[in-house]
Image (tube, rainbow, N blue to C red; front, side, top):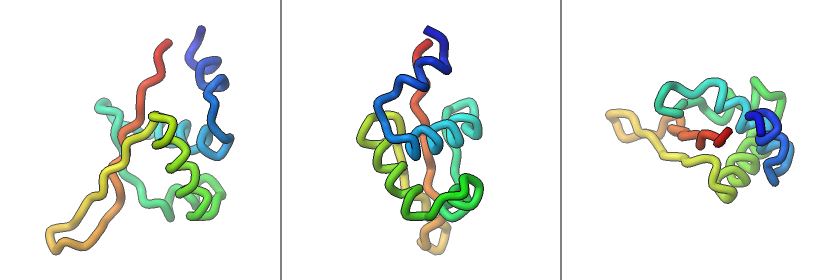
Length: 88
């Protein structure tokens, strides 16, 4: 089964598939990336709330890990996303 077919067969809502594809294409060699939810929402033409729901879908399905990140003054910054690699 090729990568795209495996992606299409994921049993998650389409909003989660779109977010998965967005993060997957932007992840570094460690499968990590960090974008604000506002930036993702803008890039994907979604509301921030829809991005949050898609993120929750991916976490529940085991395709995404999210870690909060903090600045040196202890204020929050963008999350660190680790995207699961699909098996081909």
